[in-house]
Image (cartoon, rainbow, N blue to C red; front, side):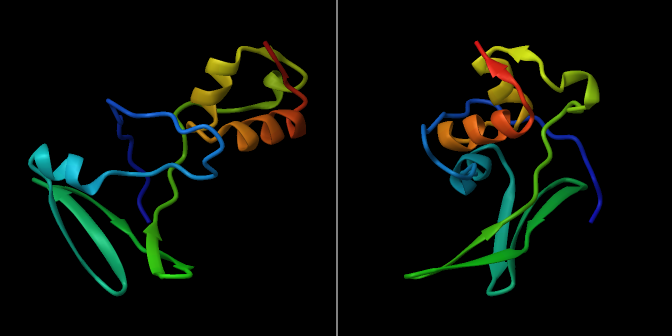
Length: 112
């Protein structure tokens, strides 16, 4: 797919949640059109769109996902760094607590 920069605002943090959730009704309230079928969900406004096309099975059906890459690069200069929990949370794309701690350990970050 195509890589585009977007900014999400008015987000909530859910400790221990392993993924980020995206509210379709919130974007609909902001004038985006949402449609979909059993292959994916499209979110569109004017000439901008994105498609949630990664189908993930659940015990009660399925959900759709999209790969979102947090802004900024996590590079070799940050290895073995001491970094605040809040900054790490932002850099890693707002993961749940367990995911953030595990990823930070693999990156050899010390969280402060």
